[in-house]
Length: 69
Image 1 (tube, rainbow, N blue to C red):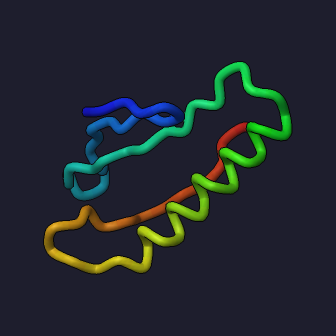
Image 2 (cartoon, helix red, strand yellow):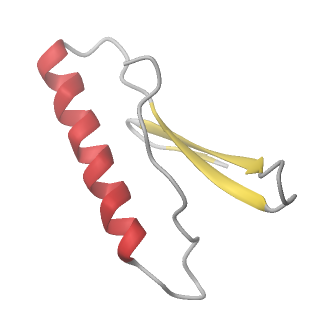
């Protein structure tokens, strides 16, 4: 759907209920370890803030996590 400086937003579908999803994936790239940690922390703070938002015009937050470090 879109690409930013550090993440990609993709369309997906929840296989359990067939509902469309928006999936945001952080792309760390060749940044150093400290920069990568900062990006991860910022991404998770954004996910936590999105989880608190409830409005018909905002995509509902379902989950955030880290895969393979």
